[in-house]
Length: 271
Image 1 (tube, rainbow, N blue to C red):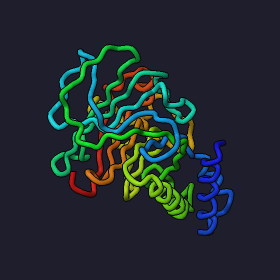
Image 2: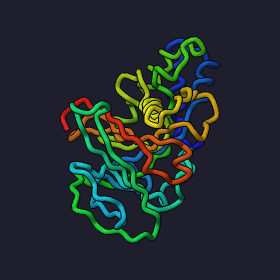
Image 3: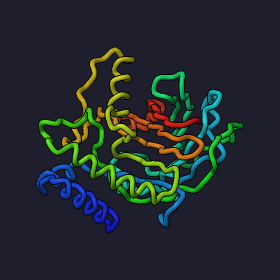
């Protein structure tokens, strides 16, 4: 385990046990930890992508809708596979787009994900990104469940204290980032921790397909190919105060069907 992750686990343990949570319950909660990559301009890790910047796409990709902004571009060849649990392609670029609707669209956002294989010819599009361009540097990280709907309070009677401890640790680390950042893989996070954008995306996809919704994915069970996952979450600060979530079925990541991704948002300030 990397030293920074070992330190983060210890900080969480200290805060949880200070709230009276038995050590065995802390261990069980940590058993649900999922690896993720935290990407931000501040840091000393390698550059693995960028915020904003020009939009370059293959010629066969349709024109983007009005006000569809490029939030981030990920260089999959530079993003280490061991930083995440997702079966992402080993190379190429992953472009994350979002169109923000603060008032008129349920979920607050729409968007798309475009995968550009390595070596594929691209052409620059005349699309304003709307956000300040910046390099994204990698930090190995992990996340813990913090969504009320995916936690059984009977099986986890100390869930409230554990979530509070995790929230404090997470907020401390976010403050060190000093602004907007991107999380790849892991659990989704929203300011209230009630519903879960990943689960919401799965339910919406099943409804659109006229299929029965599968049960919520249990954080303590082995991931299934049909489970929906967090591809990325953008925590915006400044121009947009809130979050955008790109979610997708795990099997579609493996099949490189990023066109099937869903995009949701939660905003607290003007865009």
